[in-house]
Length: 255
Image (cartoon, rainbow, N blue to C red; front, side):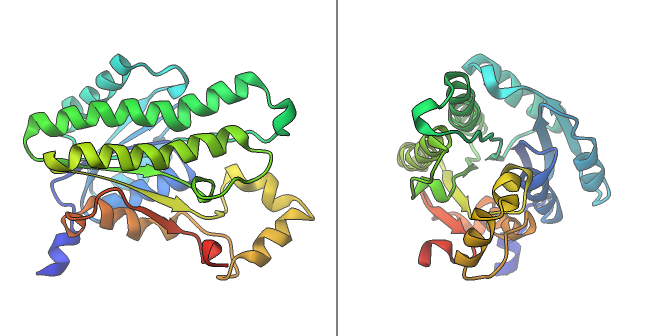
């Protein structure tokens, strides 16, 4: 049955930045579809582990700071997943940071950290996961976290825009190379979501209402809004989808 193609029973996913917010919502959505989930974050993943445990799925918390991740580190992290949960089938590169400042005075350390976490770590983890996928002979799914700023320039977020534009690029590039191995590389591009990373923007008395008024759906997005798209891209139902960037934006890009 077609509905069976959306199920993830027997699969294992690794979600980065999974302690809270969008990453937690994505991890729970994957577990609801049947996957066991490894949760990677620099802070405690206990709350996410409890939510997934309540769904009677296996879970594994992994503590890691992605700011200085090397290729060897990425391979060790993927090995932790396969050692702890038996396999890896899905990687969701969700972890990210954002720091706002005028481009003319943007701090160099903020630039370096944003590129390292949002872009470099995603690439190194994708490399490591792809090696495991090829070795298993089963292929796999990689879902990157793009953004509205993969399409637009934004303001006061030059490092984040550069990183998310890079995510769009590597999504296309890796899809081209790895489709022949049965590896689907795609991305979702959330719009303006009600999470910690957008709190300053939403609380701004001028920009907050202006941004909200531009969203055709008339509301900020939530972590739950991403779950269906991620489950779809992680499932057999998306087997012939490669290199797609799917906006989940309440209509923002159509305005």
